[in-house]
Length: 337
Image (cartoon, rainbow, N blue to C red; front, side):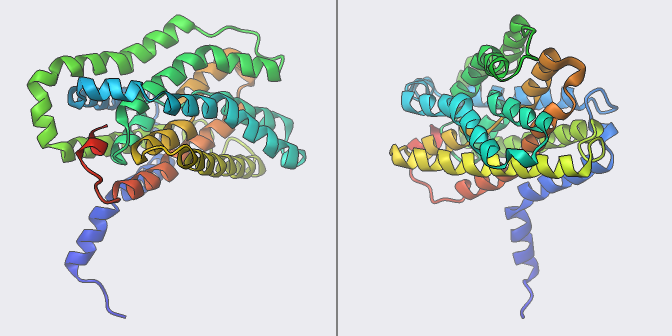
């Protein structure tokens, strides 16, 4: 068998650098989680927030007003994403629980329902959509809308499933957090567009590299936090295996359903990408914060499915984003949406 030459090896490394970075981040975080965890020496939470702020600032500066209006007008996309986030997800888990729930301990079953009721992520949904050359304005709108709705919808769903949810969420703090991390840089980016818009249009590759770098950073910090919280050692091996298996099943089913529904409705490829990434993601940060308020000291096993699902979705969706990004260009209109 003929071995590939140096140029071919370099080409393969470049093509798979993003996934290699993801694997490296996971390995580094698992080996030394205390370094990058929230509150650790690197203050990973601050680095991740700064990266997210930069991503939305750049996207705000690169998005034209027409593209923003076009993204917000795709009402079918918005309906699909929100229905998947708050209706289809819980229904899928209830179906899985009906079939296999007898082998899953009750606290873990409730943890999966809590996972299914959470809002979508913001940062990674938008970053993945951008990497895949999808409808970025539509992804931003849906990710923000999902988190605003989740402030009310998630506790209602959880409260309907369990008597544990007796406390209200700090609505003002959550809304201010979303506004500061997402809306503020978007508005600032739009204000900078007359100055930086043309330069960013000429250097789209650099923006894509920043998107990928921020995703790798998010993965690293998330894995540091999860590993430090006992993802690998704090729970029994059987619980961890069940949590990973259940998270993998949920992710596979929802990815298949979002792709199928987008095709059935005749979505353009850019809208399909936004639907797949926004409709299949669940927010770890929101999940942990809500769990602390809703369950207090009893949140341990409840958040295990969220922790496992979050890591799987980042890794799997990164590979899917790379596959989407390699498709032949369909024209400038699709790429800029």
